[in-house]
Length: 129
Image 1 (tube, rainbow, N blue to C red):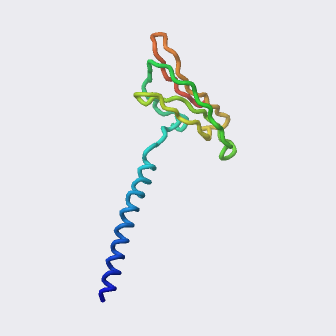
Image 2: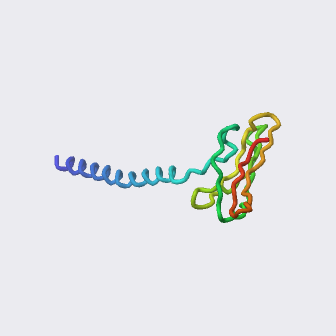
Image 3: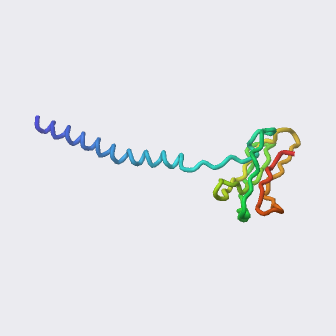
């Protein structure tokens, strides 16, 4: 009888130890999933939507990194290059992506940071033309 009691204690201890090991591992995985959500590319916004107010930044954006353009996911998709967006505190790179044009023959004209005569740089949004 005593042997069975010891076995039960060992089994309970192993279960508790397993839970202590697995719980932090599971929590760390969930943190990885929600830690970074890239900003949406402006080409994803539905055409004709209300544009946000003007974004003006005192410093120029950094040089654009070299993007690796992958194979189109299907015929008819267009590559829209990435750009430097403004987070409110710093520049954030928004990666390029493949998009289906809103209509046949549409061409993506990428956004750009335009130097303002009064100083600073203003974002001019990209658009489908």
